[in-house]
Length: 327
Image 1 (tube, helix red, strand yellow):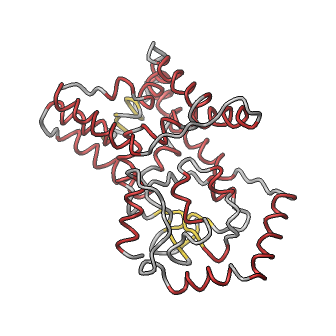
Image 2: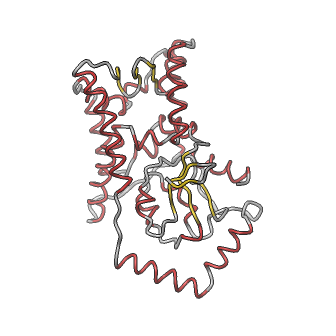
Image 3: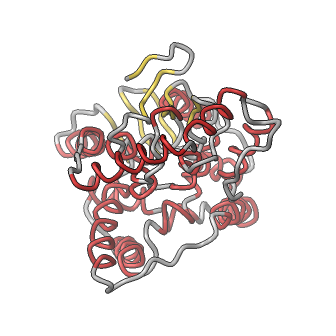
């Protein structure tokens, strides 16, 4: 992958629009494959495959149910530890101790250090630990494999799609750069005011604490966010607003675990983009958008696996980078 193309993928995480690769970014193999796929014979074959997929859809929920299980088990571990006082894990999703080891959400930890204007050793250790874990699995894997709000948002999205299919609601997208603006706003507020302002409205912390210690009035804010996602803007918080998602995305820019795209297997029907939480990362699956015949999805990918489940051609797969091992 060329440096220029990699920087473009990073820029997409900060709000840039996806684009086709320039001639100097496109490999010879990719150019030849794209030319082959556009031949009359391949065009006819591709249309036959797409029609067959429409007539005989294959539905897989392998990765979705694996994620749901992961989210539930991680959060149940917090609940059980507090309720039974087993001290396996203490605290909540944004800051905790696991078997005595400090764990701290990087976004929250940075706010605390900015607010107090000092580096705290325990907080730093906890932050580095969490950063290493989610660097390995892919930064935003936290969003789809651990975040309790993500599961609620996924169910809200299902309601939104049900209503949209009947014409009762319509999606209103925002610019993805909003998330970057909010990240700097909340960091600035922590520095200037001495308060971690974001944590008062962070639905991840609110839902986690409500599950562990019982609900508070802050849950009404979560209900409000979910209402926006159901009736106005699909996946509003996760796609356009959450500063945590941006931080984890940066952490996972060179993660070992990736989702790999194989151009020669793709028929460009777009099923993967239809289910993706962050569909801009899958624009390379559009005809002419891939830079190489094999390419890793952009850093903003949450590793949710919905695209892997949705692709009947197997053009998308989980892989361990460097070993080229399919998971």
